[in-house]
Image (cartoon, rainbow, N blue to C red; front, side, top):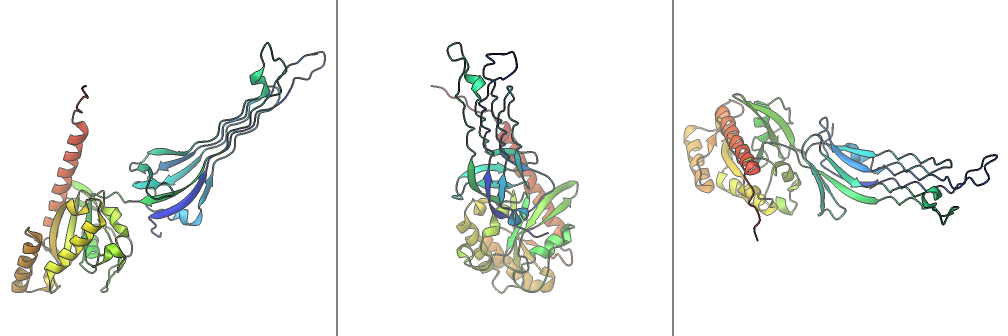
Length: 346
């Protein structure tokens, strides 16, 4: 299945049905009176978050979605049928924006979340609705209200607890493959990863979701390489694992380059809790590894983890460190959600 995290679609609700102009015509009934029914309501357009999707690829092949029009009223006081709703199914983590790509219409983060995007038009009144003691034969009817039409953007931001960032070929995909059942593409050339990969990781008795995104290079915020378009997939994470390739000559510059791109992207990614680690440690001798670990410590102002996804060195420690930070982040979110709100006082 191909990965697509952005799609532009056109939606339209259903127009309301027209009211009916009708009079009762039966034998032996001289003044039957008006009996025109009301029109039916047009269908709404809803967005619904479902569990079995993880991409927006379906919306590359179909971009137009329309709800059904309400049925017209009829004689004998028969109301028109309501139009069927149109439901757009999206994966968890989907944000819906207006055509300007800035106005947020809905943020569907949990399975079962629903959002009304376009309301169907109400049905028009038939002439039976307007009868009165002074107007016993009304010829007035109302047309159904028109449909709502708009163009929207769907943007998927994957729901992950932790994210892996780093330069290309820093060992991100290798680490994900080693700690989960995910099978990302791994090769000895830059930008092997072209789209985010997710894996479920188990550390002791705790499970969490780990996201691997394509590597960042200098100038990524200006479009260099793959750019920063995939950084949105780590906006919701509690912690970032920053991998630095130990075989790099200047590990400090590699670290600072990624940090600059995170800051340039925004969304407070540079303020997230970060674990720094030297990867591919099995490829260096002890003296060289110690020197590069010290250089990275000075640049990051924290002691880096030393790990190798191939040999398994330091992997367990890294997973437990990630699990601890995720637990702290969730505890803080729960505390904020249950914190008593201050009452407004004049």
